[in-house]
Image 1: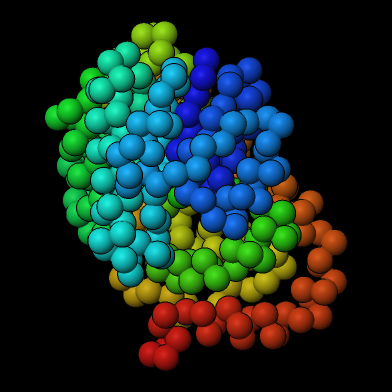
Image 2: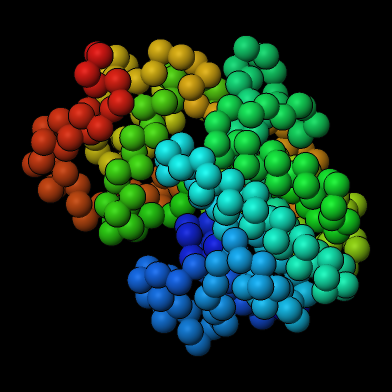
Length: 330
């Protein structure tokens, strides 16, 4: 099967590429043209086809959709960038989805579409004291959530062969190098309340669900036009409290969790909760990695840096604390 992946050179996208290739699919990537994506294109040039273009441009989108058998739509402006750029977020996340659906309709072959949304569209839910279900109401809480909710609404009105996957917190498999590049994103961690419920999932498991969804839509072996929540699952240890997750993450890096005063005092600041993923797991059989697997992988990646981290721990801790948006008020 020929699969088109939009926004494929991000962390999730790379996992999706690998999963699609593992299943012997032909992969075409549709990406914006910049230095980073050009570098990634060279890495993959013998394994995938790359189309450079702008998903905001209807003609570029039509050119990408031409002759594909299924689409996995990942292209999006995500937090923290989405918090600062409302118009760009709407143009890419919502407008790009509109362009894809219009291109599919014009093509006339009923191309299956996998749309990646976010569990954050479920809104603040910590007060409910129960699992969050896929049919619960959606709530706009920010630019990103607004763009994804509008995208879902457009699919329901205008599309007829799609699946929506709302992703919980997705943890990529970092190497030490890629982790350092993502270091600034650690600012997001300070919006995790220590007592909140949160659920994560590994990027490889997300990729399994997305590619399986595309296959099952193409073969008409799953109900179409459904929405699911993708989380790692309680049985694999992914349903945690915020403090437990932070302790685990910092522990893998041989670092101490900063004092609670540097974290949010609002339990609904962060968008995650615990989810009912039973329907999704039964349909796509994707929960293949436990939290312990992730911890072990991270330990192997960062083991060689244990001594340098220990030597520079005071400096690193000070740097981490100053990244907190609550630092000045603590």
